[in-house]
Length: 257
Length: 355
Image 1 (tube, rainbow over the protein chains, first blue to last red):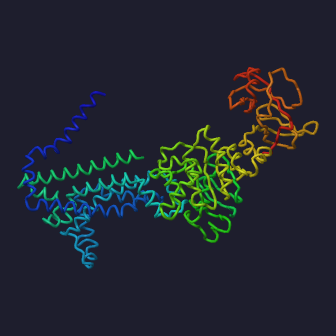
Image 2 (cartoon, each protein chain N blue to C red):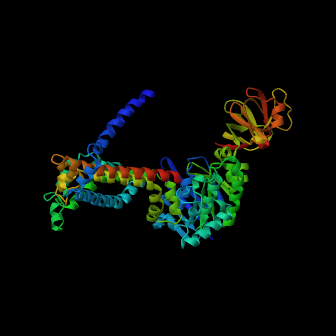
Image 3 (cartoon, chains in turn blue, orange):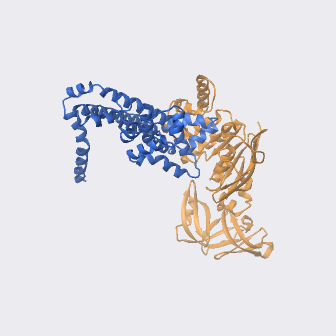
């Protein structure tokens, strides 16, 4: 077993060193100064706002949808699940093109959206659409697995005790599947926060409107490496915070069960 | 309080479920049969968890299901108390919250009623505990209390004792029998164990391959099984053979694989011969005292298993045969696997069922 330690050490060094380098490359004081640069905080704030909005949409629509997929057996279910998971493996650039073809000004729904007075490209709303598109499969997949792991007899018992399907969903299914749902939400949120390609292609990179933190980092790294590093450091901190809070939540849920 | 009347036909994979049953208020009907006989499906149809192809379920004056008339109430509108196999307690709710789940009204009122019920079941001390910290017997009582809490019009119990160990089972079954009678509603209980069915059911219905093969009191079923399956299920030994007229008004049966026995019952042609293990006597080979038993088979001892204060002796006649003896008898006869002995029983203890 001893030699297994070597690959582990290699993996650890390879994965951790680049992340550490963000903080080691320049002193913390300079990182904070770089954040003061106009636009940097705007980009971070936009990233958080759009990611939270996308997550809210994903959870509100995705939770009942995943529940239905997990608890009902119907024809074409496997195909439907595969279709829903497709954005998971889609290259982000392809996702951007696909969104343009569907919802862009000359896309198949573009005319209808324009008639309704809705403009998505080069608008913050477009960022939310792109984030929702790429991040939702992460939540759907995890939520479906969590609901699927519920004991069917809990749901049946709830019904025989007078609870409607909706009440059973709210009182039994969601609380029992909660740890999995939180994990799925964190994965989707993390994916949305880091989204780059689809956002750039679909919504563009307009400072203050569609330029999220990853886009801002890309724009700065050639001209102002310090600023790019500072933004990166903040994203690392946020991502790490998400990961830690999920681990903590899972841990406490396990202790209570 | 009204009785429960059920007819249902439903296809389940390879199994064609077809049952008709009635249970009076305050009565407990135990459906017994091997796993895969469709017992649980009957409960699921009654509770509304499965919609059958055809059938009708009524409890008192309330029609819960009438496929012909397009009536099919959802489970939450049927007022069925259901005790699930393995109990299906909600893992994230405490014992009292589980019991209170089916109650409506202000939280304080629901809690009071739930605590009352838990006290009746001797579980006051465990009210705030999660199901996973409860013992098997405690879980079973919480599940029964939860099913009773909303004052159901009928009670359905799926293998309520099978998750318990042998020691708690006896006490739990006595308690459960008392609870079922006190509830005063029709109760339908499902089990794979005939003894459990006999203990808990006022009547027992034996199910096989989707049908109720025979229903009656446990004593009736054991004494006069209608089919070899029921005989086997109630614990009788079943041998197959061919019957023909014998002397002295008796029927002679040539057993498949060798041996011959007589029966006081009439039959001709292929039959199942049934006899109860406690009616079979065992004597050393060659030292047969004819006595009053007419049937003597040279057999070999295959197994010797103690069951409580009795010993079950497996015999090969060559068809398998089981005798039930006392421990001293087994000692005296030096019964060991491989020993050759003679198994005897009376022609009047020999039942014949045409095949």
